[in-house]
View (cartoon, rainbow, N blue to C red):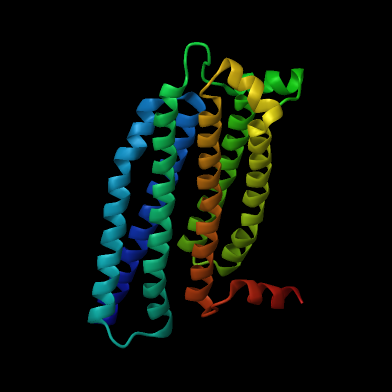
Length: 257
């Protein structure tokens, strides 16, 4: 394969990965909108769109393997890019699966609400915090939306670092996963408080499905936290592709020394 043809193929593969990242970001955004508004139709759209994400991931894999097979040996950076492409596509697909999982949970939660337990809104959470400071489904939902917003910011920064082949930006985003983790632990703390006997027993007396909904919210929080982990893995592959480093953490510590 001539060098000019290979360069064109690599550029196309790069574009496919960027498109995959865009689809995942869109799916995550729609899933969060569905959570905020209780929009079951939007949640269904996320589930249906996951097949497109899966198909594009498969296309990236096939394209990568074809290039690895037809072009041997490859230059160092080309080979690192192609091997990393397989990993990056896999991480993005798993984030897409997470968005689909959130959408599935939203649909499962819908029948768990009766007319006596309307869907909590963000405005409800503000009133609850201003009035009593207690943890409610509404305050937890608002915290989940903030966690989701942070996770999307990390995802968007990761894909920007990939698009610009920016190793320094990838290192910075890798550190930003700590912010996602902190928000996740805060949400989990509130969820554990909501499930504790002192809060849950009185709530169950009025709403027998209360604990099921709170458990589903805990699942959503975990899926959002995983977005940051997947982005960290992608950032490691970005640095590896550009610089050949295999341990982004050790490399970062050396720079700080």
